[in-house]
Image (cartoon, rainbow, N blue to C red; front, side):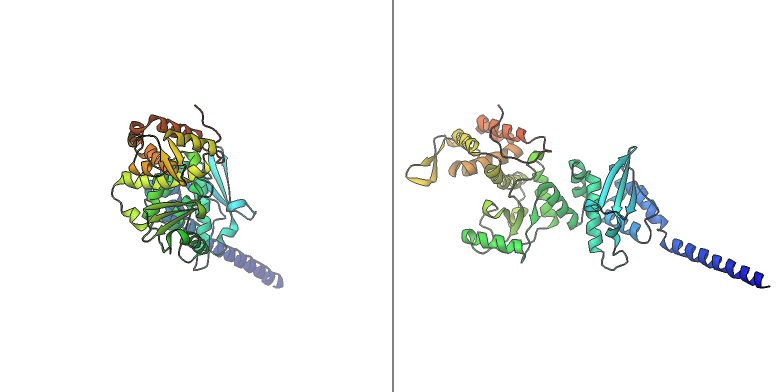
Length: 368
């Protein structure tokens, strides 16, 4: 009798353990609809470590990036995602195994998966997804697609930072206060306003016209949108910043909009891409020379018709360069018509940076 009771207790214990284990596994098992959506939309398969809310969080983050998720399957390589306790840089290790992408994610990313506030989890996942999609930002077409379909501000600012090295200046931040203090002596009080998502996407579409090697320029770190600025755009080398007036983004003429955006970035090229000899060589193309009676004033020996705009003709070699680069990238035929020599000079500079993939460096000469 005692043996039967003991046997019953043992069997009961085993049943409870098995039942409890099954209950936990069933409770933690991801929703099959979620797994199917990841597979169909993004060609993603998950291993068994993706329990609880993790798959749902991954899917939700992907869906905020891609407005038309059902149309994105062709843009994703087939991949298997696993979770690891190992420490890793940027929360992810991505490898290709037999043409299959293996994505290993740090478990710490999901430390707050049961929390109401998933902002930190989402941001870390966003970086992981972006690295996966863009092959660690080496696939520019994928990065552009990421930007094109995104309605999420975090995605837009991530692309802006990773591709162009630019951060947004916001009101009442240390960056805003520092830049405002520097600019106060030039333009008075600086009232920062907010870029819209559409503003930033417009900017980046113009930046795409530059060669890959000129995506990031030293000291060109910040974008600032300002109410009632004195100009539509200003490049402030002293503040590592490009400033745009709010009205710039309401310009209907796309050629004019492109000219302004390219012009301001071109000032940073003048400062950091060309050495002194190349700036002198450019100046000679416009016949520029300093006024012997006023060292701050430039004179020129060439006629107006050799300059692409009145502004280029009226100012100095730096402004002549910025205007000419703007037309080289947006309306090249007009620059050719004005000066083949200037077009050829800029063309040779751009070719030096065409391939990208190497750190930016100042040019010491340009190939003939």
